[in-house]
Image (cartoon, rainbow, N blue to C red; front, top):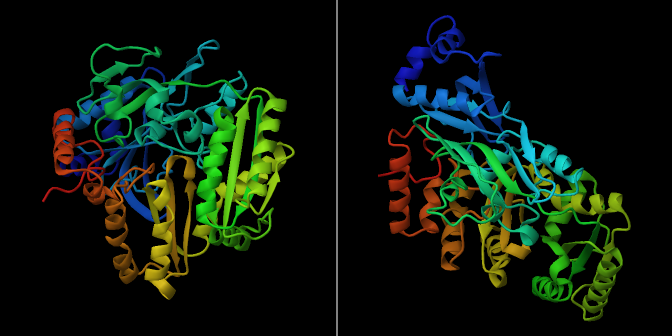
Length: 466
């Protein structure tokens, strides 16, 4: 980073950098000095660049590549693992001004947009045209679609629409040396050669900077129902899911679970009332279809079955959209409630369904009074557990009790140490718990091939070499 310090030294680093990079025909590159804070990740960077076009991104990366200047690509900065914040004094390249919708096809439902488009704004745009985004997140009001793709974000619609790897049709990516790789196809079927876009989906900005996305949007459901249920145990939660999947089938769009500790925290810190009688576990079910009467009949039959069999002890059904949003808030605002409870140790894990909650129970016994709360919630439909431990303040001894115990536990179950949040800076060194040495070596080789100088998002995703 010595070259970076030389460029930004002196009385006016902005002018020095603009003189080197130049301007576009219409505006100078937006450049700022800043202190960046994102929750537990607080880093300083002397330069923030906000290009508007792929050509400007290419110009920046070409300049940085020639001078060995490290770059930290940044979208909405909503990640949980420090993947978008500089570790030292990397130059931040933000996609905030790359927020244009390029095209939308009303027949195919294919949306092409720049990487800096905010997910919620894209959702609003396609819904006005009778479609929905295949991705929905609690951070949708801030996160960028480019960052979503770069982290292969999961979210609340995964059960219905699957991974972004299946709905992203094409990408435009700027490589480390400034080369623009245009794979921005809108075709659903293209079996010619290697599918290069898959290299960049989930790569967290370490192989290239995503500048544009082509994504397939499904038709907007005309009938949406939300139910909130109480279950007497986790075994009943699993049986309810099996029954739900069998009876609701193609209209099932979400199956979320949360434990009683989550509900208590949401009530205590956010003043949100539980809509059913107190239970050890709660389930939120959403259906999405095209025939309201047909869907209501199927849902009614399902509720009658699970209530009659004792799998569910109490439940409520949203009568309108306002009520549905209230029920969803109980699930979506758990993270907010946890943050108000103290310091939070967060784990985003994939586990076999039958072992999904065992880790929460094991940790409660292991930690005892050393933690305020140990809670579990998540996307049951795709085996994703959000394990959270709260304490009054950060404690090295508590962290030592948690790690590597949690990762070793997950490895024994052949799970994943990161289900949807990625690895970033915080979890890069635990990748070996989920991937064999041969896979790690191949990842390092791909990184060296596409970014031989290591300027793209350094210190992220891949483990530190010893």
